[in-house]
Length: 419
Image (cartoon, rainbow, N blue to C red):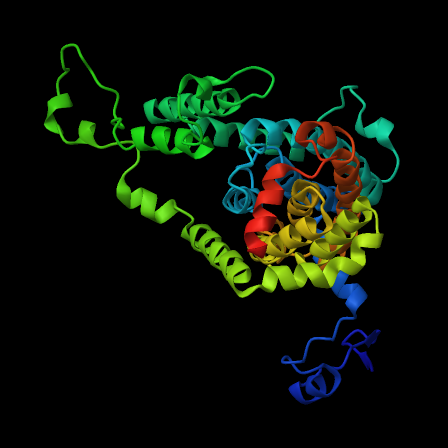
């Protein structure tokens, strides 16, 4: 609109918008938010990562931690519940067999874990970061970003919060080293162990060492004993020094009773299979596999349990398959260890789904990885582990456990079952 002022000059004035006009042209204040497409939602989620490269690093590191925990547990017989259940079932099924102990298991499984760890690292690097290994392994110093400096500072602060090593930690660490040494030296195989100092055989096992040292932790006080003069204020709480490192209440809370009950259930299942004749029947049904070479039978068993263990817990899987594989080995006159050891290790390779094992569930809960990432990476780790275990059992495993012959202790068990 054009208007003239008092001096006769034309001016342009804008019309004032009333509330009625504003309500017609402006959207209402309570408007529904637009529906985002899946791609837009993904971009919103990925805003917490600085770049796509950072997101891939988070995925790779998260899954690598889970896989490293699983692979490292294979090294010792006490590393996983699966190997513990195998050892208890094997000793109960074949009491005359004294071939599997802490030392022989370590000699067999340590190279497997080491090779598998290295090959899995190459697989994870190729899957998430590509083939640029030179940049990853470069030792050249780079300027740290502010984010890296803050992360390093946070890690240092958390480490300083731990404080100095305490007296109970020193005692527990000493006992752990002592227990490992006693396990290795009980029956090393190449030289007589400390078990040879006793007349009666079969009364000292790996459990003897762990139970004895564990019992001592119930007696040793949690507070460092003071034999000199007491300082002021130390005699105010005389009962504090008498409290042991482990109390019965702590033992009840932290003891994995579910494993104990599961092992007992496995014994009942094996005993029921024997007494009812189910083991013998299953063995006769599998006579059709006698035309296959032993390595093919072991490979098929490993593939089968690798699939089952992705959906069923590891202890339940090995509890179900151990009696069946024992009957199969005895019927086909294959050394039971030739099938039991690879199957036990392959059951631990439940790395494809969050429900496979606890490390997978913990990693998945952080939200860096999706199920498709775990399936893709876990399938490769499964294949790597299966190949390495099969190579190991057919090379150094044969000489270590004498797998090329059908042992006498398995023949005795087979005769007892048939009787």
